[in-house]
Image (cartoon, rainbow, N blue to C red; front, top):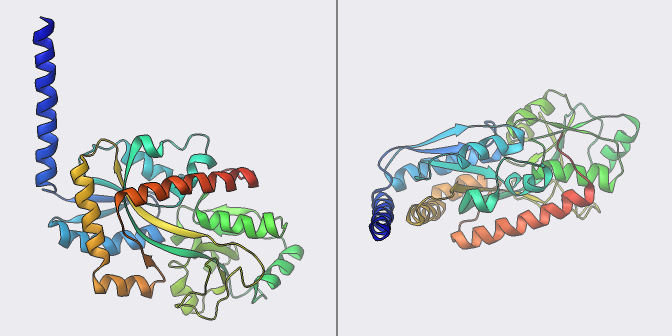
Length: 321
């Protein structure tokens, strides 16, 4: 009987392996859903829609973008972590994925246990912006103004790198009592700053960029090592004496248990999409830098980001709000 049970178990395992291999070979045979962990209008949403068009062509099936914002990206991550590991539900998220592990006591997911990193798509610096009604045109002027006029700054969500850039600049470096107001993504946060409530914001460049060009927001500084070609007159924080260099990255993840061949096929499709001249042009126009690369490179990078931001969160005693 024991031998019979062992043979049955072995047969089931082989059948399961054969099914997974077969599914990976034919994947995809229906629409693929990109679950964006933030509200429309933010960097993750912008990138998902840009790459989604190319992936539709590369994969031969519709790629559908769905926004599931909340809790700084945790809601969308939790949803994908619980999804069937069949390659049809894919997480599009930002560096908040790596930050939230240390920021929240229970973000609702474990990065290495619940996900397979697929591909890094793009990255861009963060930016400090203000409503034009504020009588400030530089970061030093903003800091002086904030010492006399208590104000808050808007962020795309607790634990996003723009939030931490703002915390570093205002609270840790400048010792200002400037609380953060968190929104469900960069789109709502930027819209709030355009409306003057709050009058200061921290966000990745893509979301505020159209409003800056339209004169509805004033850009004071970027968090990159060098100035951004799309905004050559905007100085870096480092130039201004604040050694802060942060960025927001956007990447793809699938649930743990997804057949390796599916993850590899999706990685290859992303890399081909990033090589498309029109895709490169559209990324440049919105101040994104395409990344790409292997799954292993992305997995190693995510691991290093978890370690890096864990130290920042601990050093600043930063808590979700």
